[in-house]
Image (cartoon, rainbow, N blue to C red; front, side):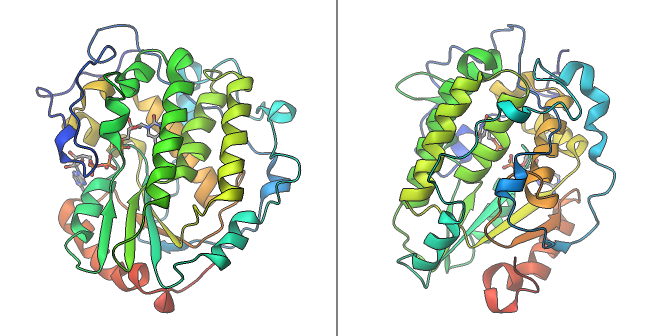
Length: 332
Ligand SMILES: Nc1ncnc2c1ncn2[C@@H]1O[C@H](COP(=O)(O)OP(=O)(O)O)[C@@H](O)[C@H]1O
Ligand SMILES: Cc1cn([C@H]2C[C@H](O)[C@@H](COP(=O)(O)O)O2)c(=O)[nH]c1=O
């Protein structure tokens, strides 16, 4: 299935991110016209008995997320060899390392050195409005903003591994996700210069959403998934990648698809709606249904299908809950 072309010429945002500032030069992946193979996901529900920490509800703002479990409509295209419906990776899913206590992240949360400082991650689907949200809050003096290191993913020593992944996820998925994990670790452990840090996504969503999607769709072999999982577990158990609050910008995949086309990032021109539906479903499983992976911090859900003006109103309505933990309505 081919994705729709961008409505206008490329409006690449490589320079708009707050990271290394590299251009996507040496881009062997983007715009070559090769058949796209973006990774899709199948549904899942298990393994969680070991990992689930609780089903305490998220702090929910704005319209409910109802009706978005429709990604299964695109199943024929979306499901890879690891199958559909309840036929999840199942017993084949490598679990956490033996001896890695499941509550390790929560424990480290308690002993975090910079106890007075807070880390807030803005999570959401591709083109859900995370960067726009961060740009808005960057105007607040007490907040430092760390955007995704997208420029690095587009140029690691001249290689655009984001573009490569979108051209051939089976071949390059492990390469991209290994580097995403490294660069996200670097973001989490970078010294803070302000009382509050707002990050775009996290090492957690990279693993629980994007790696998971590659694996479930059959585009990442189990051995690669196992190695990445071992790395992830080690990082969780030996470094401080804890987060104080997740703000989940909850969008419908169709809205993201429209915004994605407007933004028109070169590598992402091959993305079909079904891919955004698969990513959406994993976000919902992780942050709303709590169906697979532990969430060890509060989650604030903000409906984000609205226009910019309405979104700014919502950010202001929620500013206190986001920035001041004492005023938060509910914590997990
Ligand atoms: N509320 C909104 N309404 C309409 N367009 C939006 C909204 N928020 C962001 N956009 C636009 O959608 C595209 C994706 O937004 P962006 O903030 O880059 O998303 P993300 O960082 O989550 O991928 C951009 O072109 C942006 O200008
Ligand atoms: C974290 C992460 C991201 N990606 C891809 C998904 C998008 O194409 C870009 C990020 O852009 P966004 O507008 O901020 O969503 O990177 C990925 O493939 N794997 C990941 O782990």
